[in-house]
Image (cartoon, rainbow, N blue to C red; front, side, top):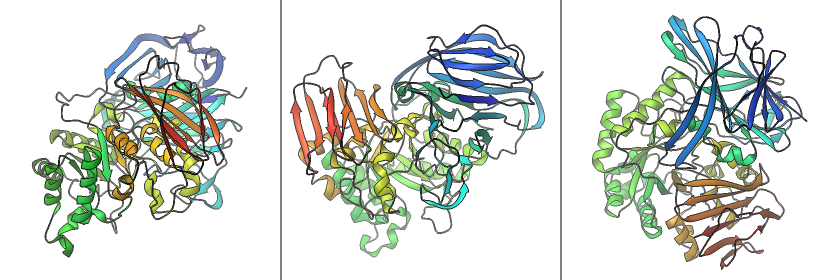
Length: 608
């Protein structure tokens, strides 16, 4: 059996810990000292080792309980429990290690700092050659594929998931990183709870050694300081998919009034009309579609600040577009350039949010004209400046009751709990890439079947799903595959990619489905699947279950749909593909135990 070795390397002095096992509260995860190392096991199977740590005896500190409500996400009521152990690292520092029921979380805590540099990070993950892993090459927008490999010797990509342009191996890796260190046992590496005075991190590898590397942080620290939580979710695929560990270790929200935070489905212009948001008539089309489909939101994307320059608009501005949406009962969200990443040659509006006084003025104006939220795009990485800027934006937006969607930005690291007005984040290679590159066409089905086990585990994902027609480059996923993505991919703001003519040409059952689609889930269940091959998840909203499955392969598959946890039902509606690629929509009496999927196909069951 292959093993994954996790090392904390600090000055090379070995751990002297307890001889007895330490465990998670449910007993599935355990740790024991072996020759100065700490071996992590799952259900008695060794999967992960912590070694070479410079501290004394690892002692039980307390039991930690997480029990809280979310406003969006894979589960509204989240609970977890951990046993927390601590050990000193010198006189003014310690490591805090928690064994949760579905993984581990650890961080380093420092005290009595005096105008000190940020302490060096020494965490390294040792991933032996031969271990299956799904890894994404790092980019500041976290937009790439997670291909299956068994080696760290992977050629560097040309960027944004493209093909390799040289034999130079990649050495810079993004979170999350999923691996299968033992058959049927998975570990997903990420981090959580980025706070002020912290940068985010990524990983650099030298062979089998993957070192955690925080991004730039030049602060001088005085007093107390700690790192973000380093998180590894461990267990079966069900444990990984259903885990809320990223938010479990994140700070709770301090907002007293959250009544204005309402997740929902959004009609979205950009996929079909790259420059459509400066055209008043196109905006009207998407508002009208939202009305007909009963969608609560419309997103007015980049270049809305140039609307008055288009002669056909006859002087109409964003104020008129926002008023039109609100008059028809559709809440508008508008786009901004963060003006930290792509600036020259990029669309606007620009430079409106960077300074506190400008940001407060702009968000107050948004609130006053009836804007419900903001999409902020093109950030420049994971450094301290970007992390603090994101927190500034979230706090300012909350003061003016604005929802937030970060694009071209870092992945979720628990902010969706601390700042519940953050309803979605891009950080994913999504459907907009049909606009830009030809290779997405062939890779999309496998990619889509990987994301539920990787990127979407850690937080909301603005993939912008559900395209029945084609953009600049065609898609070869089926109709039911595309519909299934609206359930399979969790996002508090679910942006529908296709054009109005396409959505309104679909059968009435599909239009009704989209109008009733929840984006808030009481419960999420893994049903079946394997990364890159297939994925079947069940999500519950109230008393209705939505079960979505996709085939990530180019040949037909029969997918397992054991839904025995649904003990009663009155109606079951099935959306599937027929052999000719058209809709097959029916009402069925019994919950199926398996369903056949066409190549790159899919299905949705609505169980009431």
